[in-house]
Length: 110
Length: 115
Image (cartoon, rainbow over all chains, first blue to last red; front, side, top):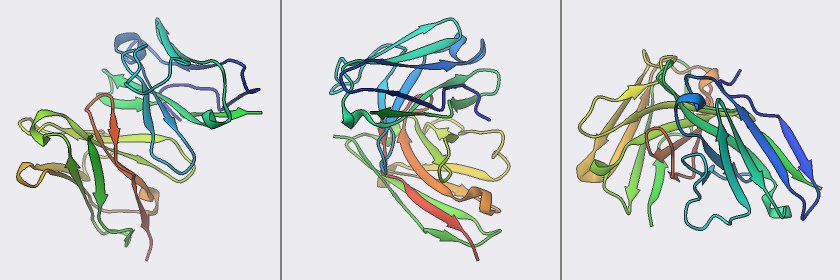
């Protein structure tokens, strides 16, 4: 049971847009930044979004993040087959004093 | 370019202690927080703990009694020790840069607990 809640899977057609949600609480997302990681099959996770909505160098602007209250959202536009991956949200939980993650969302590009 | 590389055994016997080392290039060990994160087969991510060279490490309370993380700045390494291993500790172990968010990851080391 993950501290942050994500939908197990989402799917959309190439070129379309998809939104992945991440629900937390006042002790984690509500009190700190949200981060997103992309894990392509068979590889290590990669930082996709930091500080709620910032992209590291090299991440296309098709990926965007936002946060409102105790929830965060990852939007991916112009879907490509290469975007098929597991996506994880993460943050720090100040009550538990641990790094926490969502259970991951598997994106399928149909 | 920052790179991290895990090294250590891929197979550990039950009740034994796992020791993994992460070698860092492209960044100073003494300038950043460094963490260990694991991922059980087919499962999500679990934060194990972090260290900053001049501070006491911070560990996941669920593992605190069994875990130790240390740095070796002269060799640009940091290490994980996890004692009393069981099958539930079978996972891919990642070393990463960062304490609360993680911008560079090692490729991961699959550790299987089995006799």
